[in-house]
Image 1 (cartoon, rainbow, N blue to C red):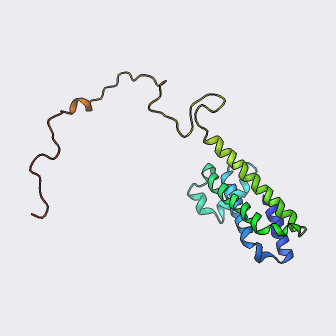
Image 2 (spheres, rainbow, N blue to C red; image 1 turned 180 degrees about the horizontal axis):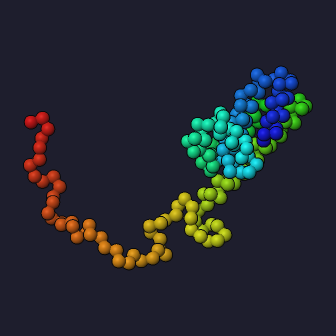
Length: 179
């Protein structure tokens, strides 16, 4: 995605179409930054992440943003980039060096959305659907499990301290406001 975005920017500069393609290139750059923060621990992107974290994205890095919490924003932003580029710039595929980089950027962004969606589906897998048969996922019931061990030596003193009939709600004198 980085290669095609740089090639697309250079072709836009050479063709004098920077004013037309400026915001699309800015959106691709934002997707690349989100992808870099998503993969901040990757050995190939570690130097680029460090450069971003020490310069323009320092506030994001200092607040601890990055990792898997960037998955959904990355996926949504990149999907919107793909759709908008497809709708607005399909006529420019015939302009040759720019068309090659436009097509490459579309394909790379679409594949990034596909892989991000695949990762999201693996993370949100319901219990019992994985190959190991382990429970987990978003609807994991920790309290009402049938295989939970019985509680041994558990004594709840709160049950003994309640005395039914001793306290009745809305009975008594009380205080009126304003009198």
